[in-house]
Image (tube, one colour):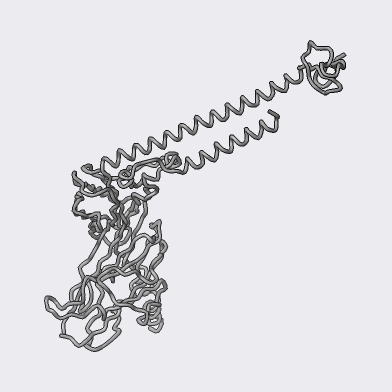
Length: 257
Length: 184
């Protein structure tokens, strides 16, 4: 009897809390966020280096054309629940339409992020976009909530959410054309740079050839010099026209006999 | 021209060309002012981030304070600390925020327990939440104090306290939401 009582105490004191702790269950959802539209360079600052880095603006939205973004919703936790995707911030502006406007997903529990349910959301800008192109900032949020237990007295119902920041750039078609023009300019600079490098290399090569040629010429040249006046005269003269001394002929610094 | 002079001219030419192109490379293209205004653009960088935060089922079932007497302060929620869990599948650290939708209200009645009476505290260590460090809930998201850079497979502990003013007896309720996002 005493042994049984002791076993019960041990079970109550140590094993029960361990089981309770091990059974802690979590509720929530996960979101696969993609960081879209990080600004690297504004078009007006585009340089040759940017072209070399292959800067593209494929995440910009052009008026009248939908831009679609894919998110993933998953539930890595123990309890199955519904989640809805909502958009906040100025991306949900009047000039945008978001399709679908309300997404409800019920992912299975214990999912991996790689198994996330894909949710494709498309943003469309009004055809006559009234403003100059600008960046819209907001967030995409997966929201969950559960109904509280009945008769809990005073307190709060609860919910949770996971949020991804979102940046959306709107360009006008005119802006796109200017972008392309600037990119062409930058590419042109790159081409000129290559041509000039080639020119410099050719000039240096020619200089080197010229120097070698000149050196060889000096080696083979015969000069007619007056030993007194130290002046050089044509090869057909035999005497110095100034002092009358006999001229001497040299080749590569040595006197010819 | 001597050899030295030829070398000097060649080196000077190369240097001049290099400097000129250095300036040219870093200088932006020539565009008119009007086009400059229209040209801001973004480039795309796509990096998948796995962000999830889990609340204990006790929190999901509602924050309860049981039956309390008027004019009592610092009444803790009956479930003790709630541990919010960042799963090991996250590949980023996360930041927690909290808000309430409104004051605690009694059904459709005008009676309210204002949010100034409803406080909370968070801590990354179990058992360390403290009413003396607690702050009142607000209707806008407020950052956790300690749960701002929570690594994968880690917990943040959250606890609530409620002051009951002199008010009409009954059940008072509202909705509390905890949000998480990537630590910036």
